[in-house]
Image 1: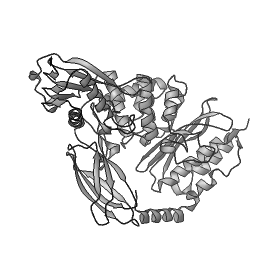
Image 2 (image 1 turned 90 degrees about the horizontal axis):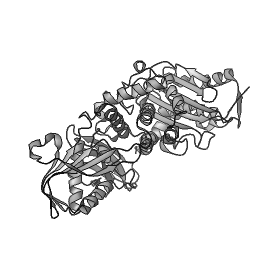
Image 3 (image 1 turned 60 degrees about the horizontal axis):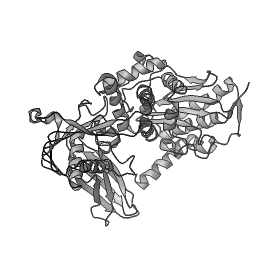
Amino acid sequence: MQNTTKSNFRLLFIVLIFPCVIFAQEKKDSVPAFWYADSREITARLDELFNDPSLNNALWGVAVKSLSKGDYLYQKNVNSLMMPASNLKIITTAAALEILGSSYRIKTEFYTTGKLDGSILQGDLIVKGYGDPAISGRFTDDKVLKYFEDWADTITAMGIDEIAGNLIGVDDAFDESGLGEGWSWDYESYWFAAPTGALSLNDNCIDINVRPTRPGSAAYISTNPNSDYVTIINKVVTVDQDSGTSIDINRLRGTNVIIVTGVISTADELYKTYGTITNPTQYFLVVLKSVLESKGIKIRGLPIDYDDYDKTLIKDIPKLVYTHYSAPLADIIRVINKNSQNFFAEQLLKIIGYEVFGLGTAFNGVKAVKNTLKTMGVEPGEFQMVDGSGLSRLNLVTPMQLLTVLSYMSTSKNYTAFYASLPVAGLDGTLSGRMRKTSAQGNVRGKTGFIGAVRSLSGYLKTADKEPLAFVFILNNYITPRILADNIQDSVCIRLSKLKRKK
């Protein structure tokens, strides 16, 4: 939440400096219910929008294609390599569906060593992960520890109420490189740059809940999960209801110490933010041990990463006793695309690498994705991909390459799952607040993208004649407020939604 005074000043600045664009939203749906145009007229009208003088020194890359007729309605810098931001998730999720299938599920395995002596397991409990990103509250009504609690019930049902050995985590399906290539160092504290891990909990973040107390006093902070794995240093002060709330976090690099700073207004009941953690496997194990013990399962040993464990202490061949399966891939990619969830996308890229090449690395994932895109008509050597989410500024694709993927997916057996994963204009996901009460609402399905100086929107829509279109809008190197780019993209979508092509 931004300081109210600062927000009002910024809005006034935008209105005064860019009035023609800020009020474009008002004009977007002022055209007639239908717009009759031939190819020349379409080009002229869209040129008028994309050539807005506010963005003279920026670079637009645009491609619009009819999926039924096969012709291009508009092209602009279609073969220029550009930073796609989160539009790269289109490539990651499309390739994942083609490689793994929409019903693919990620497993987490439980093994035991030693024998059961009464209700005491005379050995270790071993958890082996394969990158499930959804061990969190996303599919359990925000109950972050629901799966852990269910696992405790399963272990109890096996007749075990005490483990004489250790709780061991095996994370060898993935490499140890948690962050993406080219990510900015100052991203590390924030949820959108959470590290990957074969064993991961709660998006490898901790929920930080800040509540006001009395003006002038320290705010009250709680976490979910409530774990001493993370140390919170509270530097948030409560201010009166006429003041705004402004809170930031900073995790000390290489530690799990998170400093929370800022102010919270008494007008706000709760401010929620999310901080990343280091060593996802240890985080997973420490919290799991706590949950198991809270459910009556005593663990004499320690939570230990298998990489740090003395393997000679394991005398027996581990026995598989239980396997947990994630939600299907169709649901996983819905989180990725509708919410633009970076952690899920990075996990998925490494899952692809593991399934295709036997080790979950970004390099292996990218290699598999590029091989798949070749079958779609995109040459692997003609674009650059270094992560799964688009957070890196080293990713470079052309509008035509993205359009090729969208076109291919429109005829794929996985199209239903892919299409359903995209935000719906005016209704949900990252497009819930855009194109409302226009002809594009409920019609446009598109993936948004945003990093510094990059704004993108790509997806599908239907014209007034029900002609299906695929479109790609990428803007690079702009320094104006991003609402200006959004308004232009939205205006084009609305215009195309009303289009009836002249014969």
